[in-house]
Amino acid sequence: MEIKIDRQEFIKSLIVPPGKQISLRKDYDPGFKPDYISKEDAKTLLQNGIEKLAEFQDKLYAQDTYALLVNLQAMDAAGKDGTIKHVMSGLNPQGCQVFSFKIPSAEELDHDYLWRYYKALPERGRIGIFNRSYYEELLVVRVHPELLDRQKLPPDAKGKKIWKRRFEEINNLEKSLVNNGVIVLKIFLYVSREEQKKRFLERIDRPEKNWKFSENDVKERRFWDDYMNAYEDIFNNTSTEHAPWYIVPADRKWFTRLAVGVVIYHTLESLGLQYPAVTEEHRQALLKAREVLENEG
Ligand code: ATP
Ligand code: MG
Image 1 (tube, rainbow, N blue to C red):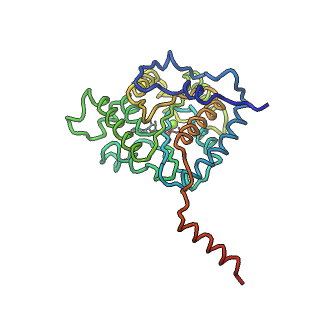
Image 2: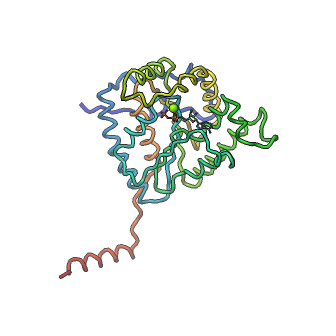
Image 3: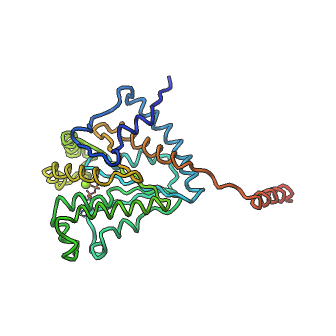
């Protein structure tokens, strides 16, 4: 039996409605999955979805009008890497790019805080994934004020109002991107603190996963509530009509991957992508070329 999902309903359960105040704890559940989807179904759905995604991507590339930026945010071990690997697996590597943002370098700190992200934006025709994004400037930098001190800001630019101002700056940046054809998607993989602990323990216990474990990740857990508050503030200030946030439950990896696939699919579909129309001149040239080829030798 073929399973189908009601995409509108599905999307509605993930999106942060623009202009509404949400509570991360009360309104979203890291363990959520719809009753009617099993793990097996999800794999089939994702596989079919990826084939369609590849078609959209081909048109995106050919049309060369839009770019898609996917900002992927999450706490450690929520599954960013695995999601990127699975959802992007069927796409043409030529039309995709992934940038991971870590602690900024000396060169990056010598520029304004958005510089390094702006430089990495996808060009028209491409899908660009930010594995962590400029939203870190409202997360890790907010939770650890000493990181803000390193940013060498003029005295007037610091102070209590800085977060509100950054929300505004980022909303403006995204508005300008969308107006000019760079579609902005923002996805938060919402893992629970308990599930994160389980995944850390697995990284410690399984030799092939040891490389993924960092002591610092465990230290960062102590700031869990600060991070959740910072995330909530982000959702309530930067989920806009032009660039909404999606909160994807991340305690089940198979559901996370399916949901991210659906969100990307839904966004690309809404663009009404098409192959460029062939002009009469080009059509004549094609016909002529066919004649030349057929009459060869
Ligand atoms: P992994 O899944 O491999 O752990 P990761 O994205 O967590 O992937 P890490 O190298 O572990 O990669 O961590 C990158 C670190 O850089 C994160 O702790 C993140 O908060 C931090 N970081 C990102 N952007 C900034 C920034 N602008 N200022 C300070 N720290 C940042
Ligand atoms: Mg990490």
